[in-house]
Length: 189
Ligand SMILES: Cc1cc2nc3c(=O)[nH]c(=O)nc-3n(C[C@H](O)[C@H](O)[C@H](O)COP(=O)(O)O)c2cc1C
Image 1 (cartoon, rainbow, N blue to C red):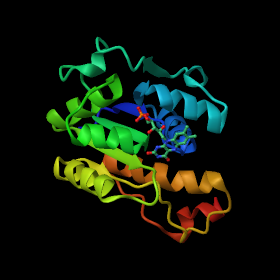
Image 2 (tube, protein in one colour):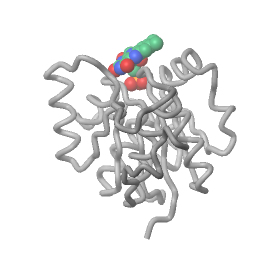
Image 3 (cartoon, rainbow, N blue to C red):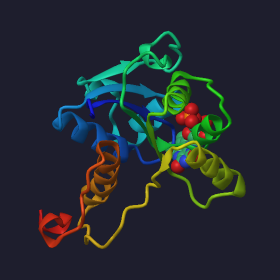
Image 4 (cartoon, rainbow, N blue to C red):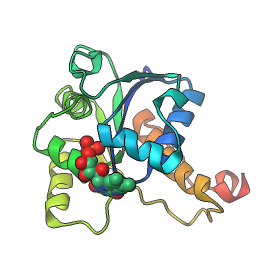
């Protein structure tokens, strides 16, 4: 049974709009959200969107230096964690079992407790080092969901593109399908 309690981690990769879209949609759907931004995550969120954690008061935010936060422990109940956008730094650290901040620790806890971890990497092109780190995470049961929206729904604007990724994330963490049909085409909504 899915209890709708999730952790959202925001790193210093480009693509803060994906985090903004996901947080708003999770809130709309009544999820309880714990959040943590890496230091660079806060800076890039501000730089790209002009927003900060305080613009999302419905999220229980924790500082990335706070290893005493509940989400640092496996005894804290949560159903899934999404890292969006995910930098290659964080992706590689988690793949190597390194927890230099709360975000990385929460991701490693999610994996060790065999909960759902969805990683939304944003980098291009990718080196073999990045690809191997993604393989390691996928082998450890994480879902690698690149920030790479499809265009078959005929997106009209950036919101349509971010909605595409948000829908995919939510369908994975809730194990429900959001199949493409003309009725749910973004271009018609
Ligand atoms: C404006 C900006 C955009 C960035 N975009 C990316 C990116 O798309 N992917 C990436 O892996 N790193 C990107 N970086 C670099 C990361 O912020 C950097 O590697 C940082 O150490 C990541 O730290 P974190 O993983 O703790 O958030 C960007 C940095 C800045 C300032």
